[in-house]
Amino acid sequence: MAAQFGRRLRRGATSGAIVAAAVAALAASQGPGALPPPTDNLSGDSAIGAGDATTPPGGGGGGSATGDSPYYTDLPPLNTPNRPGVAPTAPTVPIVTGPAEAGIPATVLAAYRRAEASVRASDPSCNLPWQLLAGIGKVESGQARGGRVDGNGTTLSPILGPALDGNGFALIQDTDRGAFDGDTTHDRAVGPMQFIPSTWAVWGQDANGDGKKDPNNIYDAAQAAGMYLCAGGRNLAIKADLDRAILSYNRSTEYLTTVLTWFEYYGRGTHTVPDGTGRLPVDRSDRFGPDRPLRPTAPTSPSPSTTPTPDRPSPKPTNPAPTTPPKPTEPTKPPTTEPTRPPVGTPVEIPPTLRVARLKPGTAALTAVTESTFAQAATVTAVDAAGRPVAGVSVRFELPATTDARFPAGATTVTVTSDARGVAKAPALRAGEKAEPFTIRASVPGRSLTAELKATVEVRKADALARVGDAALTATTGGDYAEVTVEGRLDGALAPGVTVTAVVTDSADSAQQSADGPSFGKDAAGNPIRTKVLKTDANGRLSIKGLVAGEKAGSYVLLLTAPGGGTAKLTLTVTEPATTPPASPDPTTDPAPTASESPSAPASPSGSASASPSASTSPTA
Image (cartoon, rainbow, N blue to C red; front, side):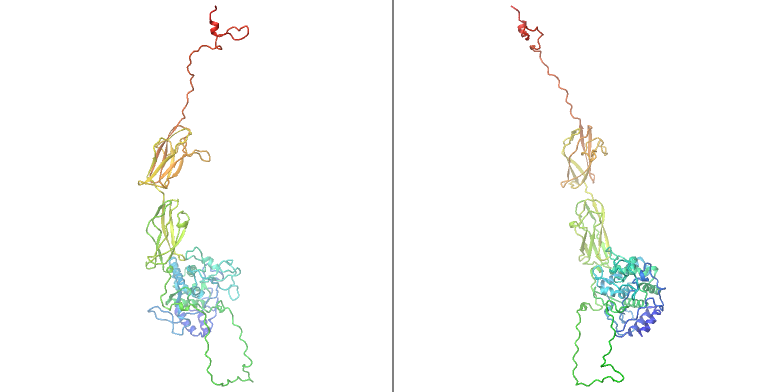
């Protein structure tokens, strides 16, 4: 019976009603231990064969997203969870699997819904329903192995298909050097949506905003699957396009039937279960996959003593004395977390990170002057789809690389949690030396939700500059000026940290640098420095030192300007050095001539000098 219905399905189940009826009969024919129908990859008797199944560009080896890897063939229960007011379309028959099949792990379901919203925003004509992604996710990986994912949606361990080595599967040589699947010989299907590496290289997405395109992340994989299914201008509201999209994922009519069945089942209603508690499928299209690692051994021959033969009739059972048969002991069941799973239909608390739908930036203006703390903190409010605040949401605030503003301890990224009002408040932010606008980015880790906050760092200002003291500023050519102190104020208060520009000019009416006036020394090339940038100290004062007069005497001006309009003009005088007149001779009286200054006298007979004038001029006797 099962094989008969399998052939009917391969000849084309082209409507949801036909699929539902066929699945009902097929499920009813499956007794305990019955195997699912065989996979018909590229079957010759398929009504929708390989030639009809359009594959999106970049569809990877084997012409499909998965490389036609094995998939789970479990069917949903036939008494599907109907929405109120919707009559069931399937007959009431014994349940194949438990009602917990209607549950989808919270993070996995959030990823499907986000992928639907994202694709509908970018390609509304595709009409992608999240229930189709859920159907494929169930068949490919059992909803990421029952939702065994971390807070960012990444599987706790890799989900890998078998090596596509041509042994019962397609032959696909390695295309990613093992980067995604860890196999450097052959490719394997990877992640909760089972993309082969060559397909992921084309269709991979970063849907959770963590900077990576990871096939092991349910958010990334679900969005990639949605875009892949919509490729080629498909409209999934049209049955033919829907069939082609599913067959582009895995070219098997049994695969098409199984996905459509789950698609219809989830469309009738579902509920959320905690991550890691989803119902795991069992049967696979290769029948002996990871969940059934051992192939059955050949049956052993019956014991000769009990085998009936023509000359040995079957032994008749004896009639022993009636005894009470021992009560069979039930096998010990391994511990399970099933008791912690809430009853079907019980509302499950969705984590705050999944409930938040938007981050609303705070309205306070974020401004500060250089090297000061912002008066207002950066804040965002986490709200759900109805605009209600969501508490307990982790929010990350990140500064751009262009700013030198910092959070405490020099951090450029901080993560905080929203309070009962949904408000996430970043710690105090301190401005650096750069005066410029910048943008703070707020985001929810593991989600693509972001908000931007504008911040501005302004320069410090002074609307008045005044010299302290009034002594004349005079120096001779090449000489040094005395130290000058200037005070800056803003609105009458001292203005610390204000940048002041000092320029030596030729007159009070000029703002141009002088070519001959005093300077602040010389640069490395020996050129005079006549413009200098200074900064007021914590007391709003600055000291001007090292000012040297030039070689040209005259009157010059030191022009001081500050942001905010503060201005001061200080007169600098350069004088020539004082000249000293030559020393004049002292006036003298005419003294009596010395012996050396007396008129020449005849030498004495002995050759000695003549007698003193008094002696020579005295009258003779």
